[in-house]
Length: 139
Image (cartoon, rainbow, N blue to C red; front, top):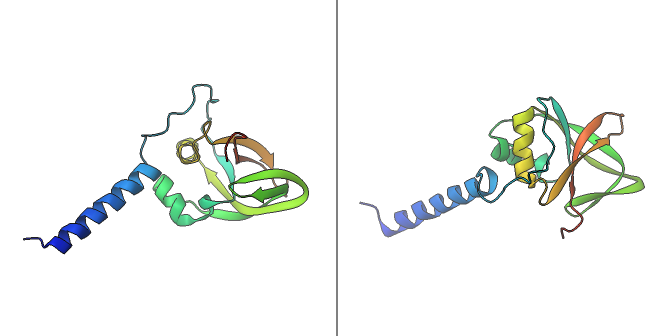
């Protein structure tokens, strides 16, 4: 027989797991806009500068361990949840190499077309990569 404390702990655990699923993996709450361009098979290089720098967050989003390498984005400046062009500045981040399915999972996490857009940019080493940039009407 479960005690009241055990029931409370079990309930909190269920709420935590359920909440994490809703935030990180659930298809609920995000419908990609119909006008998004088709995504090729890959590999795709993605520059990340915020929460996706964390291996734990990447695992929660993709259920896969994604290796990353340090990278620098020249002529941009970090501004809260976004990066803006800023000649002479740079943003330090990580570079991920992902396939089509994983890129779509990252798109879902970033709410592509709703909160962010994915744009091509060149890194300090000249490599063309994807960058998630906040849509202008977002705070």
